[in-house]
Length: 467
Ligand SMILES: [Zn+2]
Image 1 (cartoon, protein in one colour):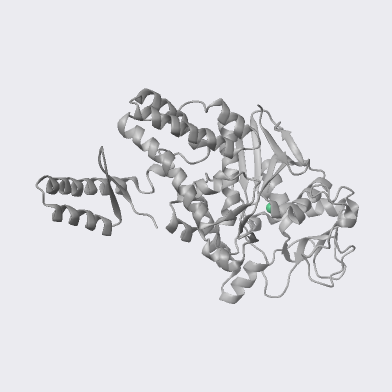
Image 2 (spheres, helix red, strand yellow; image 1 turned 180 degrees about the vertical axis):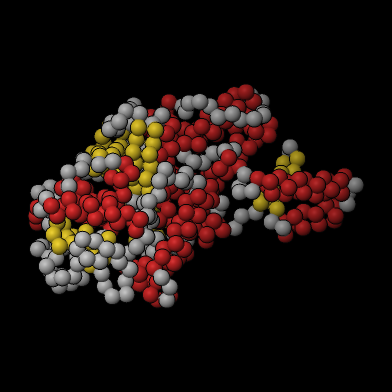
């Protein structure tokens, strides 16, 4: 089966045909860095990381642009409350987002542009829209620039609304001199004490939608393949991006992919709940790779209803996969990733990134591989393990891959491993001489240091305690 995606704009599954053969250009609306990242923010990053990895696996040369919105109302308010410049807030939060993406194994984008670094491109786009009669400078002297939605007959196309169904744009102050209440802001005139940039129409700061159009076309061209983001961005953000770019004559995105929301108890995440689901809090409960597995296992378009129980189940499922690969590596030798993924895995991901079916293939391999191991068929087990590594790598979940096996500092991990083996040898010696008190003491001291020892038929195994 060829690669196909559900395109929000077409409201159906469409075969993926890139603009340039062998290449795929992907734009993802990244973080608005107004607060620390919680799991809902990072879900989108993980979902589109899987898409990017799959495109790469299929042989596409992928250019992946994920932006940072580093100025907005909340950033300005928070900075004023803290008595610091706006960029203190956005820098701090951007670092936290980068750390969270890295921690969850998202590959860095090809380019990560910031909104405030692209004001000249935004001015150019506004100028084109003004020249063509699609945008106007408010006559009230505010310095606001608006898009005239009645000048563009296809407005509402992406979000499937007719113009008379479209709600009023809420991105400007009440009482501004707009030609139509549905006209959305391209640019917001400066207010005293707020950050602003110079334009031919006075000082001000960018509207959110304009930023993404300017950055997407700068890095991916006037027409590009895929635009992604959360389902909550379809209207007004993506509708307005598409409208202003196409009104200016650009082809813009050929496919629109949207990831579902993450809810808690069926509700949209509130601030207090969001605080308990910050990434550092969650990786006290499970390891980062297990959190990634949890976010990856649901189809990207589905809603995830977060619960601690579901997270723990996901961690246990991942540990079964990891346990098999570790056992194979320990008993049958090095597991070299296979060149190709199994055909049913490929078919599953080609079908709008069907991860549930893909993970069914993964777990099928673990089952078959385990029974091969149990019956002494180590060659067969190795074969399953090789294919497993390749499948898991596409999902960013290969426990033997560089990303996860080192868990940070490889040198330090080796030192700890050596120290633990010394302690375990002494424990073994104490048991042999039937000094069980000494043996137990060694185990307890290791436990205090966070090292859990498990006795297995192949001898003791150790791991670092989580949570
Ligand atoms: Zn955007």
